Length: 307
Ligand code: GH3
Ligand code: MG
Ligand code: MG
Ligand code: MG
Image 1 (cartoon, rainbow, N blue to C red):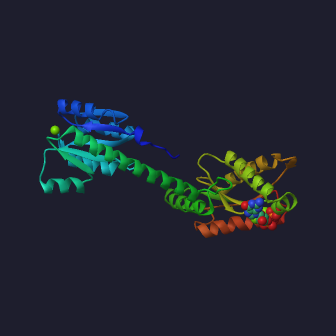
Image 2: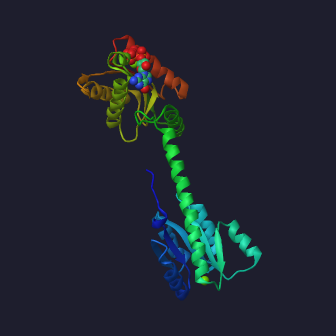
Image 3: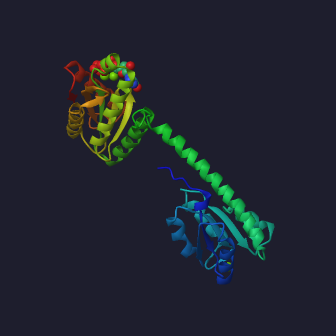
């Protein structure tokens, strides 16, 4: 799911062991942030950083109990990957070397003590802009990623993604030494639907069949659109006898469904072929076996699963 985060929603944490400074900073920036946490140590700060997904700005003191702000900055960079966190140091250190070291360890910006609160505020307004930009980029990236793994028409995994899933599962199963099986499904007489009622009706049937399939697989199965009216189901930790039963159940659900399109009521059936990793461990051979059995189902009258 894509989380839309506006700059308004950014929460901030002040990590500063001096109570007076902590309170003062908080007071000065409270009108530009949605939520401000105040902590005296890295130890207290970490659980908050990990649990508040809106936390994207840290005001970090250089000297903290048991750890330096720079060390803490490095830890944050290594452990928080789900969002960009802008790390702002408040420091008494003025040497160029210290500042370079801070930047090398993940710090984004700093201000040296003593500082004017006006200047701090100005820098934080700019930080907010950078965070908003980061969030936009991330949101775009997730949108593009989502488009690149799902089939637009059916919402199932697309061909390349279902292959990717199969690849990953095969590697896992090789290690576990547990069987995995697949089913290749093909809608029977689908061309007739297009020819008789038009392509749009065909699309609607495809979408509906995909929906029924999705509702009838187990939580940990993967289903994707393999081609035009062909689907590939991956059943982890399952041999082909068991998977045959799952495939039958799916076919029954599809064939029992009255698909209503305008004034029409359509019924479709599936043919399928099942194979498993007890027969072969190779992806290509697994597909070929399932495809051969799908062909047998077609040749022997359709509306049938072969394993
Ligand atoms: P069989 O029972 O042997 O499987 O025959 P069939 O008619 O189902 O299979 P065939 O391979 O002859 O035709 C499949 C048709 O599916 C041909 C193609 O135009 C159609 N098709 C493929 N992708 C789409 C799509 O996205 N939308 C629609 N409406 N039709 C599609
Ligand atoms: Mg300190
Ligand atoms: Mg086909
Ligand atoms: Mg077909």
